[in-house]
Image (tube, rainbow, N blue to C red; front, side):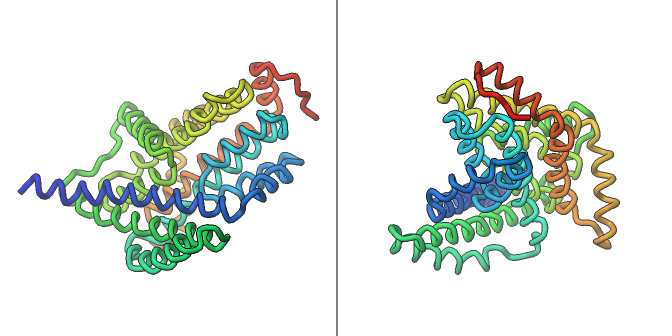
Length: 328
């Protein structure tokens, strides 16, 4: 009976994660195909000033729904000499903030919302266009629509899986700095394996909603997920030149530094976010607090390092052996 119960909970969890990730993949690929070469043109045009680079990184990540894809594109442009070191960092700031939009979508929709019910028509309509119009732009749009439906279906399975887990497991909460570090490591490992901070964020929010994971523990997992999200660019840079490797290293270093600050102040930040959230909600949902925490983490990176970005870029440039001169 116990084995049956475990498989009844485990299989929907594994399947939900897989369907969610497949949905993210189809959404990303569909939007990339629909945009075509214009995606690269938009990035190149939007790099004229630091603020334009920041906005371009954010907007394109919102459209593509993958900071990893945008990071790899930016590293490629930097290696080819099309984009300066500092402009890449500004664009990565925007991409990192925009990638938290998935958490907001999950939090604002709420887990009382029956995702699977609305996912099926999206999957059906999107699949028709994707299968029968593959060579056309509407086929790419259909692929993105299919991915959006799979995204919701995966959330539905996660919703059901964690609902069952909450009845069989005690709430996992942080009781010490050691346990907080363990949750950070968990977030890092899961995101690195999934290669999707959006997927790990959705899993974390699902666990919190069901009562399986405590608020502070979940925030620590999200800190680890933010660090893990930089591994996509790191892996991609392995086969690249010194420029791409140094930029990927710099992105990771900035996230690790911010993670350290956020971890030290985790209780203070959550308390302040709860106070602010309580202004808009009579009972502030934990998912809203966590979505806000995830966004705040990435905004904190910008606040801490924006004034120092030219110096950081120059340091990375020297490490890469580049002779490019940064404009003031």
